[in-house]
Amino acid sequence: MSELLTKGTESKGQVSDRLADAIRDDILSGRLGPGERLGEVSLAERFEVSRGPVRAALSLLSECGIVTIVPNSGARVRLISREDARALYEMRVALEGEAAGLAASRADQASAQTFRMLLEQHAEDIASHPEGAYLQGSGDKDFHMVTAQMAGNPIILRYLTRELYPQLALLRMKHRNVVGRGAKALREHKRIAAAISDGDPEVARLLMRRHILNSWAALEAQLSETEEDAE
Amino acid sequence: MSELLTKGTESKGQVSDRLADAIRDDILSGRLGPGERLGEVSLAERFEVSRGPVRAALSLLSECGIVTIVPNSGARVRLISREDARALYEMRVALEGEAAGLAASRADQASAQTFRMLLEQHAEDIASHPEGAYLQGSGDKDFHMVTAQMAGNPIILRYLTRELYPQLALLRMKHRNVVGRGAKALREHKRIAAAISDGDPEVARLLMRRHILNSWAALEAQLSETEEDAE
DNA sequence: GTTAAATATGGCGTATACGAAAAACTAGAT
DNA sequence: ATCTAGTTTTTCGTATACGCCATATTTAAC
Image (cartoon, rainbow over all chains, first blue to last red; front, side, top):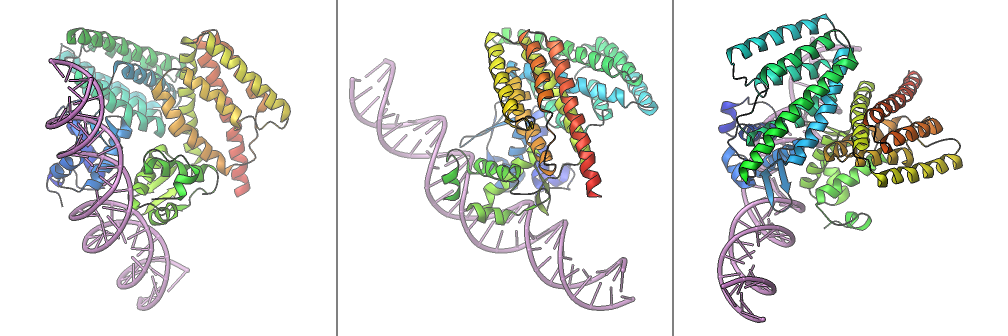
């Protein structure tokens, strides 16, 4: 079978799933730019598999929203418009707000401890990186992921990890040098974590909603700048 | 090509899409019960197509959450557990609550008029059917669909129509003779519509959340009864 | 010279067949 | 009766072929 796939990545599971992972990595790491063609035959040759798994993988990625498939025309790396980004953030406000509320309603001592350690770690990261690539870095992702996991809702968690976060990552591909709200975001995270640890769903939901709306405001401002540059 | 498909259904679009629609109808209309096997070859023979489109269709339906695919074993009609139902309703609270809020923030006169007509129609339906199959009937679906469309967020709308509502329909397959909160639900709908027409996002979101939580409480009570019967 | 139609090409969608691998079922032995 | 081993069924991956659609190129007409 393929040598390319079994080497770098884990060699278990369906070929189509591994393929989808590989292509997703290629996209989210920037090796494949937005709008780029994803021919079935070229991919099949590149990964040394047949067209069947390639079709399945592309179909999967299209469900996740990081590639668009035009019938009889082909698949391309999706390019996310500004309107898409707005809708995406509205979705995120709803889901992560709910996740924070659910996490608060199901909080226990162990989760409070997890948050404490996580936020201390993030504080150190910020201190060592004064320029604050905190947001968009692994730190921000960790916080939101932990919150989503604590919500205890597999459906919400699945949507966030499978569709929303990959699309956000894809959105940020085009707009490099992210502003990074750094310390500000960390303060907001601390208050959210406190509300969750205290078992206060309404406040946790409200704070998380605000936090993501702030994040959207920062990103939208940056999108406007980039658009001006393009003209 | 196929005669079975081109006759009853619209004959445009991909074969795999039409196939997915046909299978989904078979499931949601009760012709295929939960847990039933969906063999690729039998489906291919039944619809007179090859296995390729069948695989694509099953993969699609698995993404929508109405069939489960076990690798190397096959696809079955999904059976939704009580925990799945709870998670599903938590998702619904978040999304439809947000949709109501967004609809309120974007409401205009035309939408208010639409709501007025829709609710009058529903009131007549209730009057003519005193036993109140309003909930789960087309009426309830219409109200929530209209609200979701007015939200102006394609991502939320897509998730609701593509995944959440089909799964809810599948969930209700097992539990017939639905209680139907009828008139009560209609009253709640009216207040939600009023908040949306008034352009009051916070109240609209709050009322919609409550409305769906009430709906969940009714359904959960019924699930408990059914479980007792089964034992 | 510009536009529009006709052609050519490349890629996708579908059909079919075969080998391999995994799961499920069956039968036998302890 | 339970566990194990072998058989069978089904899916998964591969290979190949062909028609159709979409785009690009060329050609013709205005």
